[in-house]
Amino acid sequence: MARIIESPDGGRRIIKMSVDDIISVVQDYQRIVPRFSNSEDVRDYLSDTVIYVPED
Image 1 (cartoon, rainbow, N blue to C red):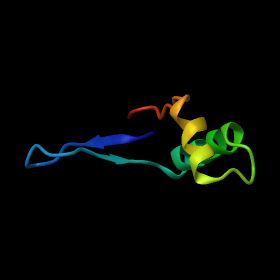
Image 2 (spheres, rainbow, N blue to C red):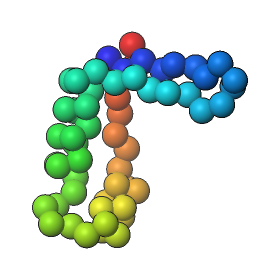
Image 3 (tube, rainbow, N blue to C red):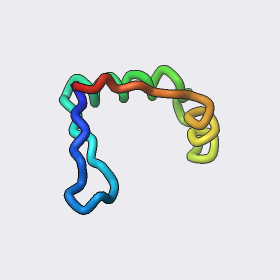
């Protein structure tokens, strides 16, 4: 499960992800983005998609 770590200075938060979280995100990426897509196409595919990571 992912864990959100607050920044002590109130800046950006950090998300600590487990190995299973990372594998899940990679699997979603591979399912969403066709193989051999260029970077512009990858951005287009991902901009239309939400990938969720459960919080601890």
